[in-house]
Image (tube, rainbow, N blue to C red; front, side):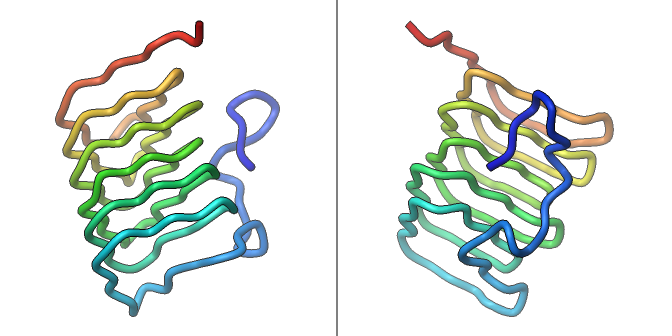
Length: 121
């Protein structure tokens, strides 16, 4: 869905997502998905995906996250394991470890944890 090369990762539309968890929703439990997913509300638990995840500004996610690519514009408290990319925007805050082939942390973003960037064999 979003790539660092040739695409502005922050340039997304609501229509790009099959599911959007709205800002007035609070969810606790496990989430699994295979198509792009956006969180604008509050989530706690585990997120396991084979697709892309966007944590929009104003969202609060207290979860262990596994996904293909993760864009953080809100707050994440928990570890992120992304196959391709983790991008923490200037409004984003991550408290937890990040594992991904590629990591982008914009100026102004907050990050507290360890970062590991394994290479694909």
